[in-house]
Amino acid sequence: MSFVDLIYGKHQIISVVGMGKNAGKTVVLNKIIEEAYDRYISLGLTSIGRDGEREDLVTKTDKPVIHVMEGTIVATAQDILLNSDARLEILEVTNYRTTLGPVVICRVRENGLVELAGPGNNDEIREVAKKMLIYGADIVVVDGAINRKTSASPGVTEATILATGAVVNRSMDRVIEETAYQIELFGLEAVKEQTLRDFAQEVITEGCVGIVDQGGEYRKLPLKTALSAGRIIGSALTENSRYLIFSGSLVKKTVDELIAVTPYYKDVKFVVQDGTKIFIPREDWMRFKKRGLRIETLEPLHVLAVSINPYAPQGYEFPPLEFLRKMKNALGLPVMDVMLEGDDFHDELYG
Image 1 (cartoon, rainbow, N blue to C red):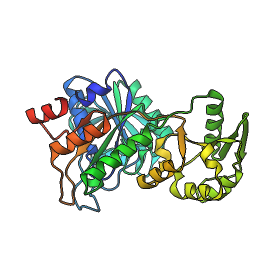
Image 2 (cartoon, rainbow, N blue to C red; image 1 turned 90 degrees about the horizontal axis):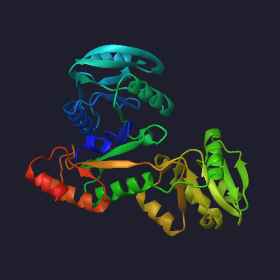
Image 3 (cartoon, one colour; image 1 turned 180 degrees about the vertical axis):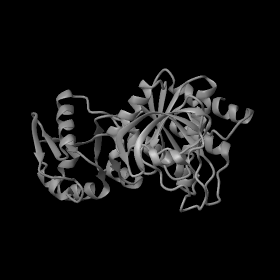
Image 4 (cartoon, rainbow, N blue to C red; image 1 turned 135 degrees about the vertical axis):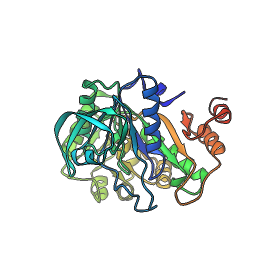
């Protein structure tokens, strides 16, 4: 089973998201490019923003580059094109601006290296992806920038590949736990009742906080953000409250403040747009769940597969086959180490 096998014919726009620097996200992207080229599948490539500088300021190493094949469609910032040694045909100069100039959509006419620096927000990423499909891409892959998992949002892409690895933590078990936690957040249960979904979307669009009481009473709190407003939100809950809707991010501090002022949070389901909006450390998440916290989303996120990198730039590593086996057993999803090859890898992955 390859990455392209998981994507082609099932999804048109997917993302690759890394759990940290050097988690192997770019290696996955290059593997997808290679697989698609071998099967005559046309790819579209872009990124959400730009993932920092050419040199990693932490590890002092050159970052991996994207090697694109003839026929690939690329969307990147105008100034970045000067750094490319691939021969490119400009298809469209879009109205989407970046600090490096407008986003330009090109077709690769001769294989080479490119750097991706796409639009910086979800709406523009979605529109650029649609344009690349119109220009002939069979699949569009969005390179999710570091610490910006929003490209995994179902409002932008249909599914995601999550890249994780030793760089997340020196403990193999801890890396597996953190990866499983991220997948748990991505797959939180969706709100089902349509009237509630409509109200929640309205709250999220307006950027406020909403409360739904038993019997269908809908209220909006005049708050521009839930950050540092946990006590205010908690004080607005009553014994009749059933849903609490957050328009932005849900963070540990907000939950701590909220549960400190009211016992009614146990009777309420929290609602966020999707799992990328939750920024709560795993230990606190487990603590909140034990205290009765329940969260639903408007849109669950579909994780197609997990890619693992057993090597960390800090100089330590995990035994590759052991890491692969344990991650597979823990997740119940396709797990791949694209650097492993041969019979041992095949037996471990499919045996």
